[in-house]
Length: 120
Image 1 (tube, helix red, strand yellow):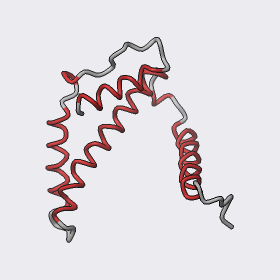
Image 2 (tube, helix red, strand yellow):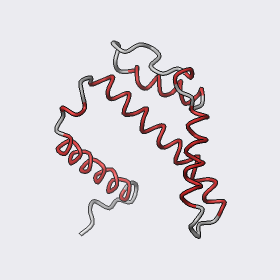
Image 3 (tube, helix red, strand yellow):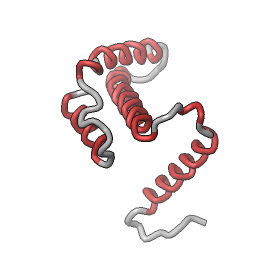
Image 4 (tube, one colour):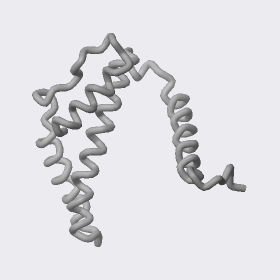
């Protein structure tokens, strides 16, 4: 995670919750370069037996690594904000709600700016 990304994450994580410390993550406890190198190596080992072009594989590794890091940061932020043990929640109900949200985001993106209200 770059310092800029780390600062953005900390700002977003603490912006609406005054109970959280100003800095949730520091680069000392988040060795992104090692994480990224390991993910890229693993991606290459999986994809080397495919017909995917080398330039795609070279770009996919860092993108996948950044996605995973963002996902972990978002999950961490949620755990700090909501507390408790995630295993105590009704995860299937919550996943269903997330699927509904995702579907609505997808549809809204499809019609954004087109004037289309719905597809029939």
